Image (cartoon, rainbow, N blue to C red; front, side, top):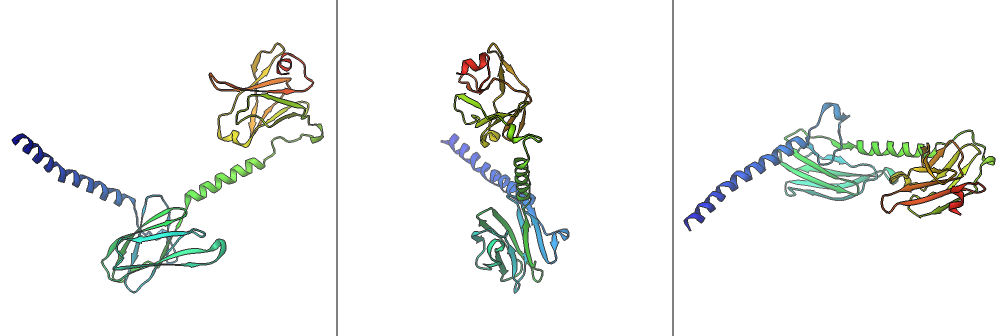
Length: 275
């Protein structure tokens, strides 16, 4: 019993130390995440913060003054919850219409020297705002820029530009030969069609080829032997700078998927094997 009592006393002594260490970690993390108003961030009287997931954004407010928190145009407010709802008032309104419609949260403290937090959830993100009241200094408003959205828009623009770029130039449509046959397995990357212009061959894949592993291309020789051929990729097309009678796309290990692409009218072992 005495031994158990000593163990219990030792554990009890460790608990406050562990709690103190945890509290210190929380304070340190919050301090590092806090974004303060900066002179360079003001557009007229509105502070503009670059949005970052998990950051805390400071808003200074004052009694008898209303501070405006503006969300992104088109963003839908789900909820706004303040830690102190007795000494702070938080309301919401909107401006604009259609695609430019914007939600505004209006914040006002009842006294100086107050501090609480505000969590705003929308259909796009979560904002964490640190509210601090002073006797007379109040921010007119705050809003955000969204660097991640800009990066996604640039990536989407590049993808669209790549998709719109011609696969090849100087190709006469009237000279294209689409008389190809595709046989074998039916993986998600199975080609849609193949065609040539008498000197180059194109193999067209489904759009999903860009998100998965692409199969290597082997040309079948006169005796049916597989030879790795040089080709380049443009969007969802393989472009081979030669003609071939038969070729195979192979992907996988023990359960290898094989799809054969054959030009009708061609002769040779590769064609005969695929008939």
